[in-house]
Structures are given as structure tokens and as C-alpha cells.
Image (tube, rainbow, N blue to C red; front, top):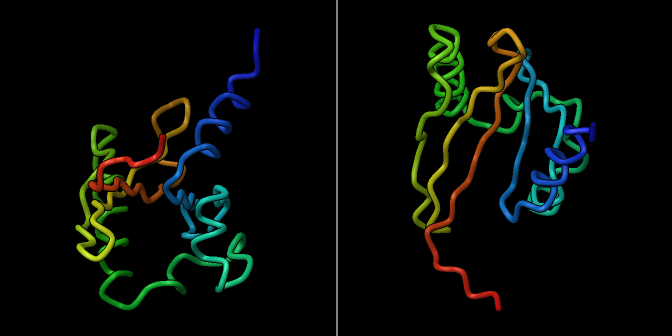
Length: 118
């Protein structure tokens, strides 16, 4: 049997949108290449708290969403805001273990601008 983790990692690493994965202590445990490029001015963020990268209003929203994820294993994705400047929607997504327990979360970006790449 193939190592599915290698496939999943490849999917995330090929994504053109930034993917930042956090554990339940709000510690950044992974940035895909797009995230590393996007946030490179902040240095290496792995091992740092995502809360240090946000203002108080954003920290409160993150806490609220994580609390919502904890309420039910059915609560797994929520729209957080639209970034008009970059024409993208931003979501928070729950990460769950084999027993559906909440093990972390990540932020998902979806650009609305039509693809122009050939």
C-alpha cells in the first residue's frame, strides 16, 4: 500500500494558496511553499503562535471558531472574511484525528479571480 501521507502532503504543497496549519495550542506546525513565500518577511513562523501574527479582533475570532469546532465533530469549516484587495474568501478548517477529535486547524484561501495561467 502506498503512503497516503506523501500524497496528501504533495496536494497541500502544490496548492497556490497559502496553507498554515496550527495545533490545538495555536502553534504553527506547517507552512506550505506558498505560505512560506507569502509570509517570508516575518521569518520562519514554524513553532510560533499564530496569535502573535494577528490583532486582538482576529485572535478573538480564531478563539471563537476553535470553540465552535470543539462543540461538534460536524463543525469543520467556516467562512471568516472576504479580502477585497486580493479578491479572495478566507475560511478556517478543522483538522480531526482518526476518532474525529479536534487536533488542529488551518486557514484556507480561495481566490475569486479567474485563472490566467496557460
